[in-house]
Image (cartoon, rainbow over all chains, first blue to last red; front, side, top):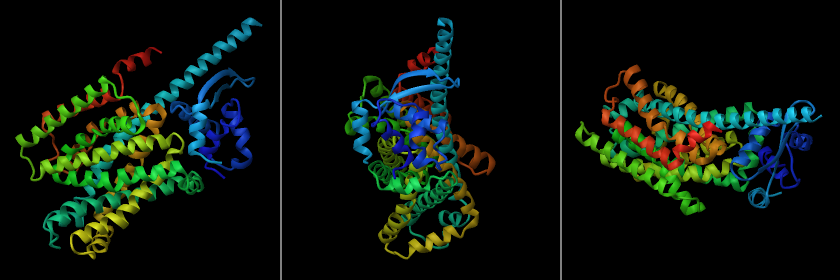
Length: 88
Length: 362
């Protein structure tokens, strides 16, 4: 089991793109009991990854529930950095 | 249909702008708070080291401690106590937030080891240098240690090939100019003995923290900042207590001094109460520094944190001078002016000031 922040970043190396809700959905099996697996904390972790060049925004939309969904991806360089520092 | 989707699009753009703006503002707030907590930590650790058994060690000295022990070993002991108590606060916070499992898991990873290296640079080396310098030359050393963003920029150029522009070099020159202004003040005023050595030792602290900012800033983009600070304070506190303090005792020619002084310090409740407070503020001084750097970029984060060149002398004056009534904490006007010049220099190194206005327009 990896630290939650690592798992959040690592998720982006395995999918084409994802938003915070997708990440929570993908990780809730293993990390469901973690207090930090909540939308605001996950959004902050993703945006921090973006601020440091690990992730980049791809698009955004309003969901049917009226909530904003911002999608991100790890580009080649970002994914390489994540994989270099965070091993499976 | 077009109207509906157009309206949804407008809403999405507005919500996205709000989210980005909120994140940016939170980053700046966090970074500014880190500088204020740094000033509070400085004031309370100095208060701790002037009360209880410390008042005797630095004053009457009934234990007949040597000059080496008083100048260097007590500085290391103060830093060790502060960081260890801070580590206990960190573990308490991490436990309350359910992050201790991730703390142990992170220790074994590459970013975790990077954080430990940063802790060793910023902890045993820089913190001790800072406290020794503070004891030798007073709060005048605080703006000097605020040169760490400048040093961080240079080290980032060397280690991580980050850019170093003419604007940054201009800022570095301004900071050095401000340092000379402060040095001059010390000579003109009633300069304490060991002022110049204290200032030189303060530069060691600036180097340690500059490197720490480089390395830990990179690590915090992957590690949760509350886990990062727990690693930092545990590494720093334990290495100070187990390695640095005994090493200094051996250098002083009496290994037994290490446990003896530690026990006396820990059982001096008049001083310990202030170390509990300083350790608490140290948690946020460093964790918010890392978080600010990772949220709004190291450049802007370090610029906002660098405002501790104001907050350090300000809180030392307010808490030690005004509240407690100790003498000698008022700074000469030129030192305040130099602190402002230095803060401007730090800002210019860390970012293009014009970007502040551009951000406002965005």
